[in-house]
Image (cartoon, rainbow, N blue to C red; front, side, top):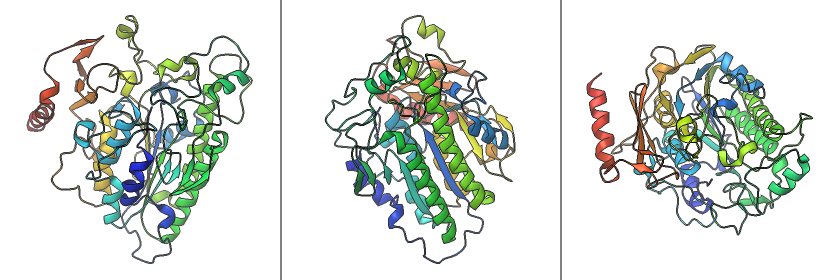
Length: 445
């Protein structure tokens, strides 16, 4: 897994306005009026079946399950890619990697990232009078890349070594030692390193504290705000402060899931106590679970990809099988989003950008094509279908990075790449295919 590299973010994301401590919260101005606040929480490597409301076998997400009962749960919601950097870049831009230039993961040695000519969600909302903040492993407060990457590692590999599949009933301390908790990662607050190596066991609480501080200060300022919280959970390593007494197997993963759930609960509680009626909280994931980590990976729920698995492949992260990109998703906005509703609308992380822009009464950047759509009508219970057509790009399993491998048409899904066999001549005509099918889809409505 990789992240939007810090070197680029210092020039790009800081330019986009994510420097919350540099914002003057005391600036007087118009009250937010009808403009809502937005809190977007993005989990890492969380499987569709890791949400208890989705999958009865999961018992570790009490806060998220409560949010589902108090808002809307989406069961056909998809990441824009099946791995980290492309998925996150699409959230920030509303565009597939083929358009925004991010088609593969970044790592420690990356020298490029999200192109500076891309317009981020924060830039658009800043122009509409919003205070913007970002917390997580990307920037403002967080670590600059994956916490399974040391400062001198080879991109794509674990350093120091972390066994892909822990075996047997060995003591939990062995898992913690083998998968390390203190790597030479810096913890940044804006341009300043505040801790190195970062203490991963206390990172979740630090994120919760910074997020709640931001919400409080932004609410007090009287201006609308956007807070994007990019979690390190559930990516390996899984640092947790307390391990349950349950025997073997998934106790470490379950403890990490409960820790993440508690973090989200703290953020939601702060929203409820400060700006409940005027804040839209959106929770989802960046891609499916990392199946190569076995007991340290999440659950795809019902989407086990039997056809693929029988041939020795994975149905999860990096692939265009359902488990790779179908992710948990919840919307919470008391008084606006209907309570205890399960939506079967076909939606995507790509939709966050245009939906938030519309709700903020802002304007989409001109001269750009967007792959997401405004799904406000779905959120408010006035419409159900969502997308008619949705594409899924290659995220490293096979073929060219970013090339379209799968197309979803309503309830049907067509694969251009399965088990290493490719259908011909998709890559060179990608933009034409995207725009052509979308035009036909639009005209047919």
